[in-house]
Length: 333
Image (cartoon, rainbow, N blue to C red; front, top):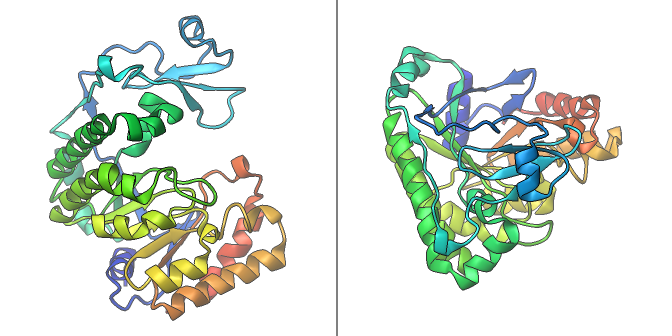
């Protein structure tokens, strides 16, 4: 059975032979780009640097760069991916958010790759929705907007979702198996906004994207950090098939396996905050084995993965390999 078939069976809950793998040295996945943007305006600040013009605008003394939307990000000493320090939408009264033009010929590039014949499961990258709002307005403003300017929030997210749906339609039939999007939606113990607000303002955007992906024959993977329990049923209803949670023990994993795994799939490492950073081999190996047993009892529903940047969370890759070895030894379903 190929990797593609194994992941398809896991997502469909159709008697997979084992847990899925997404490790740095052994993965059932391959990733391709969903789009290529064209006719972008000139952006001299598209790479990290000490840009005097951006420093004058933001007052930030570290490295900065400006993205294709016009948001400005900052970081210090080359560490991390940075954080948005000035959003492009300073005031909704001056609302202008340039949606880039994607190259319709990108589908020819994908077709030439004969992805339908690839033995691995093919994922492609979607853009963020709520997180794009967070950056364009900055977090504090975005959260306030859900109360003071809900119509603008809904309109903004719908515009993004329609753009994503158009990209999906442009690559339908190219052999892509899954559409991957991401949005961090919670703190360590709750969601950023109430479930009612999420249901009214944010859920329709996810549903529009998920509907387009499903119509194109793609499953929908969603990354989200934080504790999103309050949104789970709405996200499932919106069409999310696979949840990429790096902190499964925020729930904990027992809740994910028992309440949701019979219906959806989880794409997760052993927890990156409560377990792996301890460096405790016994704890790490025990929790990896427990997760295998939990999801086996639920009939599957787990794709085990690595975290992409262990250095950022103080984890020695050797510690993560302890978990991987246990998972691979106990992966049969």
